[in-house]
Image: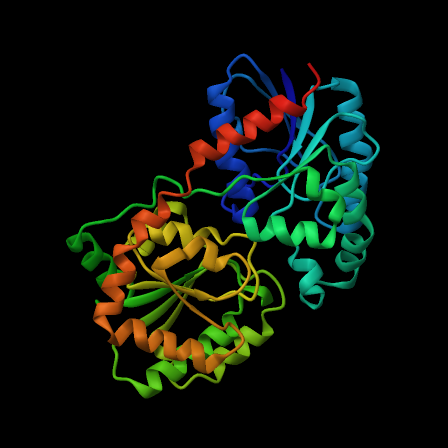
Length: 375
């Protein structure tokens, strides 16, 4: 078969949730199906690392699409023109955008509907684009992939027409995330946290991730206990970070917090493996890949009791109300001070992680591609 793929989010040193979803699934599918040709559509010069096999043909389509107006031009003109030229058997988009003007069978991925639940977290042009085009995209897609049962239910609640054409393809955790020895954990703690245990946050810094309340809760935890734990924050500043900066400046115990910016995969995996627990209390997640990465490292999680997060964390997570700073602070305290609880959650990590696997997800996606492609 000839499969066209939107790969505009495969960006070196900038892979986050959707980018990793595309990377891990496409890497496996390309390798497992050498007799098929995959046309990768980039919106800027690409990195050779993303050409996963000799059966990948790269195409650079202009303009670089990083604004709603440019999204429209890229998908409705550049992508449509290339699809008309190639006439592939199917077009796969690992994000919630597609070409409305193309007649090529299309599978679209909707990771979450956070922009509908929290429109105030993005600017006006994006809000307008989403509200106008999402219903059209859902109607146009031949099939829709989403990444959790929660997101599937949320999608159908907002767009009932999607009920007959949506499937769950879970995220997985990359093999770099694995348990590490106590000696290696201590070495990492010596390097990053003065040898002290630490809670870890991994993700872009933006309003939905709730990092401002995370800082407030951690400060309250430090003020009410003598626990030595630090908080390490790994991730780039994305947008609307003023509240995070303000929360940090108001902390009494800011010396116990470190911002490490975006880090390479190997560094993040080692930091995860040595963490006392992951602190990931987003307001909204369609899945929350860092949760699964922590579980695969045998690290328990403090997470939110909303959206998909209890589904992913399972019995390895301590779930709290992400809008309640006091409840979050109590969560920090319980994990740090109740060793039996920490051990119980840790024992559940690997069994919970085993329910999510990139190889199984890649096979499921390929079956969907075969079912909906023009042969």
